[in-house]
Length: 147
Ligand code: FES
Image (tube, rainbow, N blue to C red; front, side):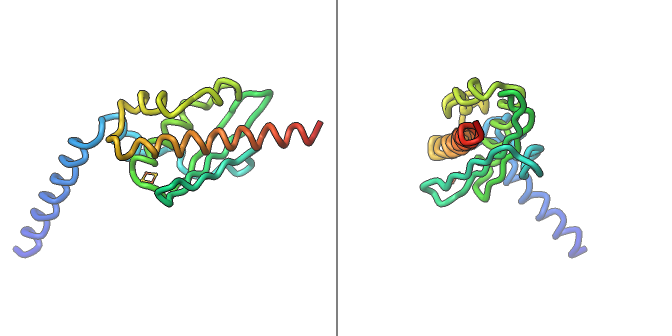
Protein backbone atom coordinates (compact mmCIF):
# COMPACT_ATOMS: atom_id res chain seq x y z
CA UNK A 1 0.00 0.00 0.00
CA UNK A 2 2.71 2.45 1.07
CA UNK A 3 4.77 1.25 -1.91
CA UNK A 4 1.88 2.01 -4.30
CA UNK A 5 1.56 5.55 -2.91
CA UNK A 6 5.31 6.03 -3.21
CA UNK A 7 5.27 4.81 -6.81
CA UNK A 8 2.37 7.15 -7.66
CA UNK A 9 4.19 10.09 -6.07
CA UNK A 10 7.39 9.29 -8.00
CA UNK A 11 5.41 9.06 -11.28
CA UNK A 12 3.72 12.41 -10.58
CA UNK A 13 7.08 14.02 -9.78
CA UNK A 14 8.64 12.61 -12.95
CA UNK A 15 5.71 13.89 -15.02
CA UNK A 16 6.10 17.36 -13.47
CA UNK A 17 9.85 17.32 -14.28
CA UNK A 18 9.13 16.20 -17.87
CA UNK A 19 6.40 18.87 -18.30
CA UNK A 20 8.70 21.61 -16.95
CA UNK A 21 11.48 20.49 -19.32
CA UNK A 22 9.13 20.52 -22.29
CA UNK A 23 8.00 24.06 -21.44
CA UNK A 24 11.61 25.26 -21.10
CA UNK A 25 13.48 23.45 -23.87
CA UNK A 26 12.86 22.58 -27.51
CA UNK A 27 12.22 18.96 -28.49
CA UNK A 28 15.66 18.88 -30.14
CA UNK A 29 17.43 20.03 -26.97
CA UNK A 30 15.61 17.42 -24.88
CA UNK A 31 16.44 14.68 -27.40
CA UNK A 32 20.13 15.67 -27.42
CA UNK A 33 20.67 15.85 -23.69
CA UNK A 34 18.69 12.73 -22.90
CA UNK A 35 20.81 10.72 -25.32
CA UNK A 36 24.25 12.36 -25.60
CA UNK A 37 25.79 9.61 -27.75
CA UNK A 38 29.02 11.57 -28.30
CA UNK A 39 29.69 12.20 -24.61
CA UNK A 40 33.21 11.17 -23.66
CA UNK A 41 36.78 11.59 -24.82
CA UNK A 42 38.37 10.01 -27.90
CA UNK A 43 41.04 7.41 -27.06
CA UNK A 44 43.55 8.81 -29.55
CA UNK A 45 42.53 12.38 -30.40
CA UNK A 46 44.67 14.52 -32.70
CA UNK A 47 43.70 17.57 -30.69
CA UNK A 48 41.69 18.64 -27.67
CA UNK A 49 40.16 21.98 -26.71
CA UNK A 50 39.22 22.70 -23.11
CA UNK A 51 37.42 25.87 -22.07
CA UNK A 52 36.00 26.90 -18.70
CA UNK A 53 33.08 29.29 -19.07
CA UNK A 54 32.26 32.27 -16.84
CA UNK A 55 29.59 30.10 -15.18
CA UNK A 56 32.38 27.80 -13.93
CA UNK A 57 31.47 24.87 -16.20
CA UNK A 58 34.02 23.19 -18.43
CA UNK A 59 33.66 21.87 -21.97
CA UNK A 60 36.21 19.59 -23.57
CA UNK A 61 36.08 18.73 -27.29
CA UNK A 62 38.37 16.07 -28.73
CA UNK A 63 38.77 15.56 -32.47
CA UNK A 64 40.31 12.98 -34.76
CA UNK A 65 41.53 14.51 -38.02
CA UNK A 66 42.57 12.78 -41.24
CA UNK A 67 43.61 14.78 -44.31
CA UNK A 68 42.13 17.97 -42.94
CA UNK A 69 38.76 16.39 -42.23
CA UNK A 70 37.21 15.65 -38.84
CA UNK A 71 36.66 11.89 -38.74
CA UNK A 72 35.37 11.67 -35.19
CA UNK A 73 34.65 13.91 -32.23
CA UNK A 74 33.56 13.66 -28.62
CA UNK A 75 32.66 16.15 -25.93
CA UNK A 76 32.88 16.10 -22.16
CA UNK A 77 31.31 18.60 -19.81
CA UNK A 78 30.48 19.01 -16.14
CA UNK A 79 27.87 21.61 -17.13
CA UNK A 80 24.10 21.76 -17.30
CA UNK A 81 21.68 19.81 -19.51
CA UNK A 82 21.78 22.59 -22.10
CA UNK A 83 25.56 22.18 -22.29
CA UNK A 84 25.15 18.44 -22.85
CA UNK A 85 22.77 19.19 -25.73
CA UNK A 86 25.22 21.75 -27.17
CA UNK A 87 28.20 19.37 -26.99
CA UNK A 88 26.29 16.51 -28.54
CA UNK A 89 24.77 18.55 -31.36
CA UNK A 90 28.07 20.29 -32.08
CA UNK A 91 30.07 17.05 -32.33
CA UNK A 92 27.39 15.55 -34.61
CA UNK A 93 27.56 18.67 -36.79
CA UNK A 94 31.34 18.68 -37.23
CA UNK A 95 31.98 14.99 -37.91
CA UNK A 96 32.72 14.76 -41.64
CA UNK A 97 33.45 18.47 -42.02
CA UNK A 98 36.81 19.92 -43.04
CA UNK A 99 38.64 21.80 -40.31
CA UNK A 100 38.00 25.02 -42.20
CA UNK A 101 34.22 24.36 -42.35
CA UNK A 102 34.11 23.25 -38.70
CA UNK A 103 35.95 26.40 -37.67
CA UNK A 104 33.15 28.47 -39.24
CA UNK A 105 30.47 26.91 -37.03
CA UNK A 106 29.39 29.58 -34.56
CA UNK A 107 27.11 29.70 -31.55
CA UNK A 108 24.24 31.18 -33.60
CA UNK A 109 24.29 28.17 -35.93
CA UNK A 110 24.44 25.79 -32.97
CA UNK A 111 21.51 27.57 -31.31
CA UNK A 112 19.55 27.36 -34.60
CA UNK A 113 20.34 23.63 -34.91
CA UNK A 114 18.96 23.14 -31.39
CA UNK A 115 15.81 25.17 -32.14
CA UNK A 116 17.04 27.68 -29.58
CA UNK A 117 17.80 27.70 -25.87
CA UNK A 118 16.39 29.88 -23.11
CA UNK A 119 18.31 33.20 -23.19
CA UNK A 120 20.08 32.45 -19.90
CA UNK A 121 21.62 29.36 -21.56
CA UNK A 122 22.91 31.01 -24.75
CA UNK A 123 26.40 31.02 -23.20
CA UNK A 124 26.35 27.19 -23.10
CA UNK A 125 26.42 27.18 -26.93
CA UNK A 126 29.27 29.69 -26.94
CA UNK A 127 31.21 27.52 -24.49
CA UNK A 128 30.89 24.47 -26.78
CA UNK A 129 31.87 26.41 -29.91
CA UNK A 130 34.83 28.04 -28.15
CA UNK A 131 36.09 24.60 -27.05
CA UNK A 132 35.82 23.39 -30.66
CA UNK A 133 37.74 26.40 -31.98
CA UNK A 134 40.38 25.83 -29.31
CA UNK A 135 40.74 22.17 -30.42
CA UNK A 136 41.13 23.22 -34.08
CA UNK A 137 43.61 25.92 -33.10
CA UNK A 138 45.63 23.41 -31.06
CA UNK A 139 45.61 21.01 -34.01
CA UNK A 140 46.89 23.69 -36.38
CA UNK A 141 49.65 24.72 -33.95
CA UNK A 142 50.77 21.07 -33.66
CA UNK A 143 50.83 20.70 -37.45
CA UNK A 144 52.95 23.86 -37.86
CA UNK A 145 55.45 22.59 -35.27
CA UNK A 146 55.64 19.24 -37.10
CA UNK A 147 56.46 20.83 -40.52
FE1 FES B 1 27.36 26.70 -17.46
FE2 FES B 1 25.45 25.82 -19.18
S1 FES B 1 25.17 26.77 -17.24
S2 FES B 1 27.57 25.99 -19.47
